[in-house]
Amino acid sequence: MAALMRITGIFYALIGISLCMTLQTGCAGGTRPEETIPEKTLATATNVLNARCPEMVDKETRLDSVLLSQEGHLVYYYTLPNKDEPGINPMAFTAFLLPAIIDNVRSNPDLKMHRDSSITMVFIYRDRNGEFVTEIPLAPERYR
Image 1 (cartoon, rainbow, N blue to C red):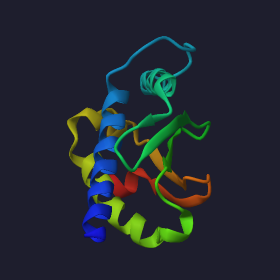
Image 2: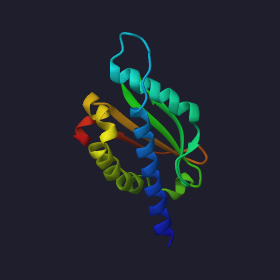
Image 3: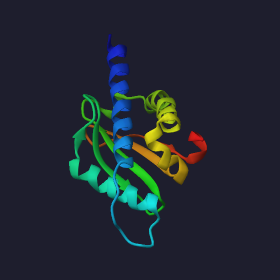
């Protein structure tokens, strides 16, 4: 039963990730003229998402913030408010989430801009005490 609850929680986290990435692609706005269109769109979407944060994306996962780094990476910061780091196996957590994240990025038509822009996405998870759990980078080579 506990394993089923963990899988269900992770499933909801994936839905939340998908929702957040989908929301990013629907926004546009003005920024510095030297930025490319994807950078403008991502920067605007990041601002929109951050205005709503922190936000529970499911019962197990809270999106705390999103950052468009200077390296051009889209970084998502999540907290698992019901979990303590010692109770989470980072390798198993990553192994479970990664295939679904890759599949979503590859197949979701709303993420076409991300694929076309060859953006690297990074998902950082912390436990309820702010302790680092895992970082899941997703470079273009992994989703093409």
